[in-house]
Image (cartoon, rainbow, N blue to C red; front, side, top):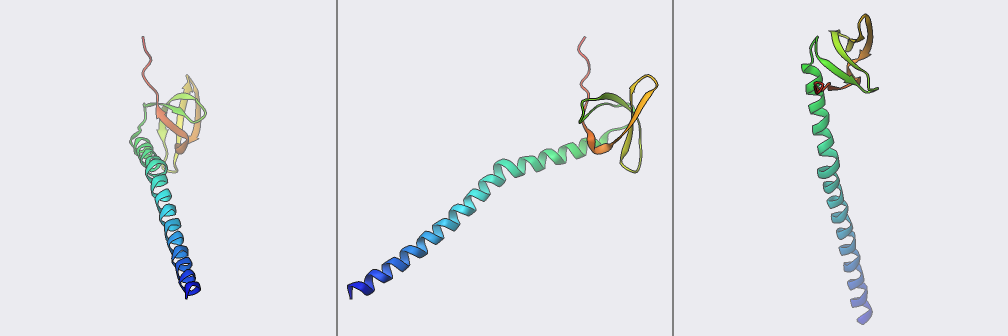
Length: 105
C-alpha cells in the first residue's frame, strides 16, 4: 500500500515540475519580448517612417558615416547624395540612418 502511494506522489511531482518548467519558459519569452524584441521593432518602424519622410535637400548621414545632401530619391529605392560640390554618390535608401544635425556655430 505504501509503495502505491509513493508511486502516485512521484507521478504527481513529475507533472508539477513539467508544468513549472513550461511556465518559466513562457515567462522568459515574455520578458525577452518586452525588453528586447518590442523596443527594436518600435525603433525600426520609427527609422522607416523617417526614411519615407526624407526629401531632396535634406542633409543625411549614411551607415558608413558619409554626410551629404539628398539630390534625388528614385523609385527603385536609391538616393543620389551630394557629398561635395560636383561629387555625388548613389546609395540604397536603407543605408541612410539619420538626418544630419545642424552644425553648432
